[in-house]
Length: 256
Image (cartoon, rainbow, N blue to C red; front, side):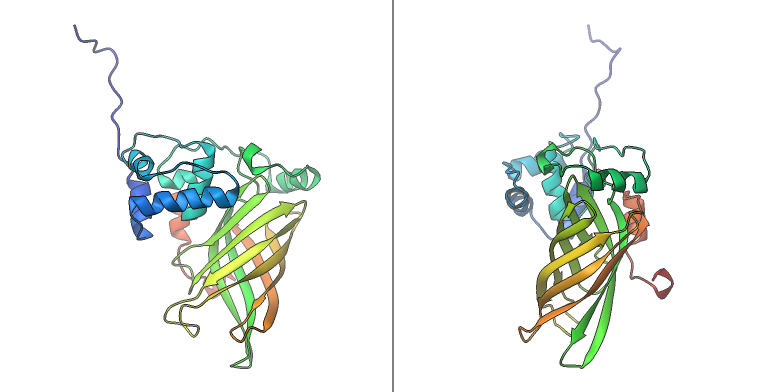
C-alpha cells in the first residue's frame, strides 16, 4: 500500500543561477572552470565541473558547500542567496558599529574558518577620481557596488547597470584598514574604448562601518603612475535580489 501521509518535495530548477550564468554569457562548462579558478585564487580548491553546475541548475542542491559558495560569489559578484540557494550564513543581529568594533579588535580570521558574512556586506556607492593627462583634467566615476565579506576577505563588484565600465576590488581587512587590488574594464563606447586598468588600493574603514575612504594607485595609458582618492559609502545593508535590482542603475547626482 502506498503511504500518502508524506508527500515528496518537488524539485524546482534553479532558474536564478541559470539566469545569472546566461547573463554572463557563460556555458555550464565555462562557469565550472571559472568556479575552479576562483577556488584556486581564494586558496580553497574545489572540484567543480559541468556536472556540478547541471546539478545546481536542476535544483538538486539546495546549498553548496562553503568553498563552492564563496567561489560562486567571487565569480558572479552576487550573494549566494541571490543565486537561488538557501543562505546558511546569518547576520549576528548586532549593529554595524558593534560589528566593526569587534572586527577591529579581533584576530584576523582565515577565510576557511569564516562562516558568517562580515559587517561590510551590503550595497555601497563607489566614487573615485582619476587624472587624464591627454585631456589635462581630473575626472570622477561613480558606481553602485555589491560588497561581500567573509572573515578578513572582502570582494567588491560594481552592478552592471550602475555606471560606465565594470569595477572590482579584492581586499583583505586588518583592523580598520582594507588593503588589496582594484581593476576596471572601461566601457567599449567610452573614451578608453574597453581598456582594462588595475592597481593597488588601501582604504580606512570609518568606525561607523558606513564609509571607506583612501587612495588608489595604478598605471595610466602612457604607463605613468597615477593616484587619486576613492570613497565608498553604504547605501543599504540589504543584499537581497530586489534591492540589488533597485540599485542596478546609474548613480544620480541626488545619490552622491
